[in-house]
Amino acid sequence: MTLLENAAAKQSIRSRPVGNTPTIKNLGSTTDKVLNFPLNAWYVAAWDYEITRNPIARTIAGRPLAIYRTEDGKAVALADACWHRLAPLSMGKPVGRDGIQCPYHGIVYNSAGRCISMPAQETINPSATVPSFPIVERYRYAWVWIGDATLADPAKIPDMHQLDDPEWVGDGLTIGVNCNYQLVLDNLMDLTHEEFVHSSSIGQDELSESDFVVTHDDTTVTVTRWMLNIDAPPFWRKNMRDKFPDFEGKVDRWQIITFEAPSTICIDVGVAKAGTGAPEGDRSQGVNGFVMNTISPQNDRSCHYFWAFMRNYRLESQLITTQLRDGVSKVFKEDEDMLEAQQAAIDANPDYEFYSLNIDGGGMWVRRLIERMLEAEGRPASAQPEHAHRAPKAAR
Image (cartoon, rainbow, N blue to C red; front, side, top):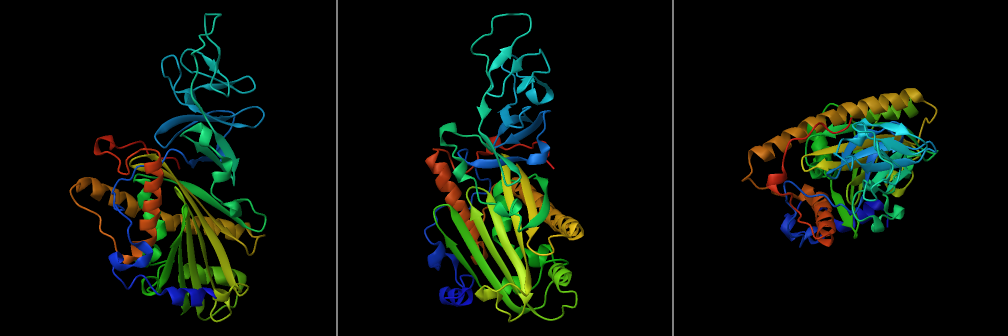
């Protein structure tokens, strides 16, 4: 069965009330406005190039970290508070092959977080340690695990292989967004907002007019949408002409959004000359990209949004790489403005509720999977209002 036949067989879920849709029934509470974040999960703490011998400060899932590299190149994540008087180790300096020295009184810790030197005394108190956290470098990112370290299996790191696969090329950035991380996930799982928020670049009427299919398993959710025989919006017309300079005419456009719990979303996107077989699997007459997104909560109301746009054509062109990175960055700035305005409205209207439309089908399943993770940790789905506070801007 082809993608089109499969989509037709499943029919559109957008034309039916959410409560009667078999794909998304029995979801329970999926409308928390400020969702908690799981701790037993891998979150990106930094791009690989950001980590050097000198420590940087970054807060991931509510935990302030001091992150640095040893002389051997190994990434290290320690709690960003000295055992002695809680001075931030991220303000310290590297010592020896793998150590870090507190900037306040000179206490030195090794990469495991154990104190190896104290000023003005020969005997080291055995309790003088700071927590260290599992950290793994993969797909150009450093992933950190804040929860139960015995559960930190690197095999659970979400698949983002396009980031370092030689058949793909691209680049990305980090956005610090002052909103709950779940709002970013909602945004990415429902791309009909492109029609209204990004009308000058990737938006078009067919986004909200087209059918889509939502599928899921225990850890992933996929939303698939095809728009056939349509005009290419400006962003995609430019990309088609990068590969086919004389291109004119209609295109078939696809968006295949794949969420992997708790906060990674990779979007297979592209267009091909209309009627050349893209829905059946032949994309040779088109251009294909992957929008790689992974969101690391900083706290209840801010997050680090790591993203990249990868492509599998014209690999030799740094010009296209830079143009795509800068173009997508402008598009995402429009999202950032909207998400921060949405968070402000949520905080200003604490008695208002969320309601869901059919277009929220994918996002509702995402929320359900995260709620299951939180339930397994014995933690509430909704962040408590008293925990809400403004935090410093997340990393850029």
